[in-house]
Structure formats: structure tokens, C-alpha cells
Amino acid sequence: MRAQDLPGIRHLPLFRDMRQAHFEALMQGCYAQNFPAGLELVRQGDPADFLHIVVEGLVELYADWGGRECTMGILRPVGTFILAACIRDAPYLMSARTLERSRIILVPASDLRATFRQDPEFAVSVINDLAGNFRTMVRHAKTLKLRNSRERIAAWLLQQAEVAGASSYQLPIEKRFLASYLGMTPENLSRALKSLEADGLRVEGARVTITDRAKVEALAQPDLLIDGPDPEAEGGAAALPGPSPE
Image (spheres, rainbow, N blue to C red):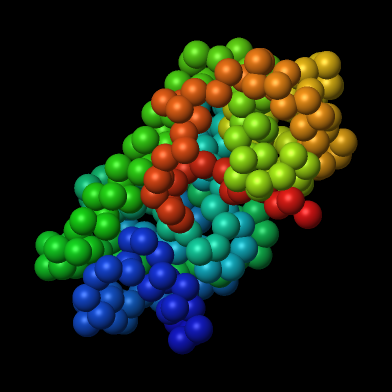
């Protein structure tokens, strides 16, 4: 592992409060690998042998069943996956693949569990990370089950505007991933985006512009218990990356 990788890992909420000696011991058992785009890193159902830390590149978390696939989240550096399976020593419930050339740090799950038992501050950080992931998943399940497709899109785009701090911003991911994450086909997403122009949202390519916030809010009906804000776990949640205002 490169020495320059360590500060970014140490800064993650999962690792930043643990004892330095325990952090160094945990990192000694890790190793780094570079992966090309389009490579499957883990497969759902496989044993959780490693916690993965994305330090370069882009990784999609996804699930499949009956010939269908859905995007569960996309991770940018520096982020981790999949903590819950590693702590429980259980099979992965999601698969992961690189979307571009990526550098991944692999932390042996057995070392992670041993450190969890030795370092109380690390144990608290693990619990906070898992709690944040749980709340993220509940929020996403609620929006999928309680909102129709136009409401889901409007709510998500409005939330991204809040994250960006701007009424105009660039989508952080390709639309096909957004469609899958929101439980839609790309064709349905495209039609829905066009229909939202009358509701105060204009999407041109990857550029989103809120032209009438009141109309967007009337459609999305933002809800604190669905949309937040909430201090979710950083770096490990199965969600989508935030937008860029530029």
C-alpha cells in the first residue's frame, strides 16, 4: 500500500477515532490492487473476506435476480464497502464492479472483526456507520414505495440541489444508473424528465436547472423523514454520489 493512501483512509469516520496503534496494525494486514474498468470485485452470495476501500476510481454496488439488475449505489473515493457483511461474517448481499480504472485497498474481514473487539472507539464508529447505512436504506425504500416515478425524480433532483447549494448543477452519474437506482427504466426516466419541465425542472444533458422551486416542491413534497437531512454514515452508504455545481 502507498503511504499517501493512509491519510485519506485515516480521515474516514470509520477509522478516524480508533487508536493509532490499532489503525497501523490493521493497515499492515491490508494490500492494494489496481483494477481495470468493468471488473467484478465481489459477487453477491460470496463470503465477505474483505472490506474494500475505494481510494481511486468509481465502483457500482448492484444486485441481480431473475435476469434483472438494479443499481444499489455508486462509491467515489474515499469510501468503503461492504461493512455489514464483514462484521457479521456473512455472505455479501450486493455485488460490486468498477466503472472506471480503480485502486482498491482490501482489509481482511477477520482483522476487522478482531479490531472491533479490541478498540472501543472503533466499535462505536462501526455501529455509527452501520446505523447511517440502515437509515439511508430505509429512506430509499420509503421513497420507492410511497412516491410515484415523477415524485421520486423531483424529490431526488431537489435534494441534489440542496447538496450542491445551487439551483443549477451537473448530474453526478449517468442517467442509466439514476434510473436503476430510482426503480425505473432509462426510457421511463427520459420521458419523466421531459414531463417535469412544466413542474419547474429543466434537464439538458447532464445539466439540471430548477426554474421554479415552488412547483418542484409542490410535486416532490419534501419530507424530513424521507429526504433528510440526516447525519448519515460517510463513505460507506449505498447511495449515489453528490452533484457538482460546475
